[in-house]
Length: 115
Image (cartoon, rainbow, N blue to C red; front, side, top):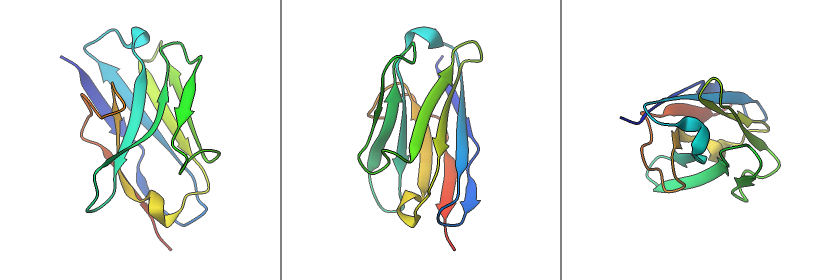
């Protein structure tokens, strides 16, 4: 059974930073591309970023490009999202997933950007 557990969320001021983590289990993590998606209050699921199985390719939504960095550690079965220069519009529930449309996502971790 695919299981993804996100952590690292919190409340930060605009301009602040957070690093999210997602620990995977139940599947061959090192073979899978992984994604981060988010859902803001009252809005649909939004793709944020993804990373290839070997970290050789990363992609970002225009809204986070230059501010967020995705990475992974296959030995630890963990994918990360380093978020810098956070804005109020980044406030959302963040999920890691096995696809860009949010398949197999976990329970999520809340990120709130507020002064």
